[in-house]
Length: 102
Length: 236
Image (tube, rainbow over all chains, first blue to last red; front, side, top):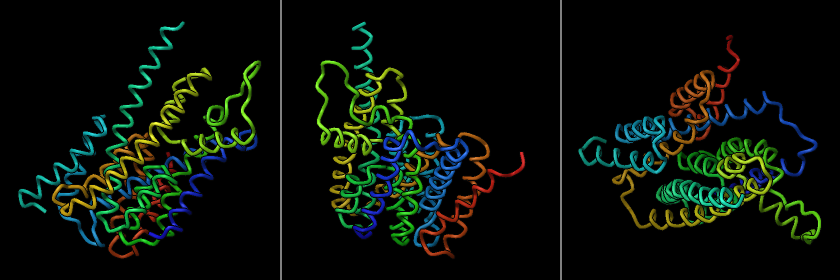
């Protein structure tokens, strides 16, 4: 990942951050647009979670990783604290691999 | 009058500490994943300082580690961060310098600008959420800046620790480290799946992204998932 890409993402991010305080008298984000952006973010996060859980180099990533992520998802849906969720994913996946399930 | 203020200060510190602990673990996982995936150490470190947005950082690095182009990575990260615009509007009263009246000496213009830039940079899901818990200007400002400064410090230190851990631990798969990345994304996404339509859109998008992964160049399947947003316009 080139430095230019990191800087570009940082610049875009800061633009979104500073625009509100600078132009708060002049811009209003329509509620519909705000909802659409929120949905787009949700779609993107879930798609990234799914592809990074299930695939590796364009193929299936094996069973251990998605199993750990599934357990984490169930825990997160039950509002278990974040650190536990993240550790559970790693532990389940590691134990499955230790048991020979990859 | 003094007691509740002091109690709420203690509560604020406790809640901020809990959030920092959670994000610290995410930060370690981010740094370790990035380095273990083969990125140079400075990418996660500089990114955490300059971008300072966990979801977008994970998204961008995820796209790159999957073999995607830098353009796709920046697009995915930037799209996730569009939410910072409405956030900035919501807390614009506290991110800038305090409006002092009367005897207090106002800060010089240079300092006021620095405060404004810094405040904008500290705008995150967490700092905004803390600010929005209050309606009075003073506690609102305290909540925002306490959370923002603490989180910025913890996040960057945690990413650095993760980078160190990721370069020392060779067998990251053995520790299940690769599962923490999608787990974090899922945990971040779940609270945003507020209604049935967003769930349908996310489900459709994710299924499409996974199905397209073997055929499309890396990075594009995730962006193609945005087609799932069409579910939002389905008949009621």
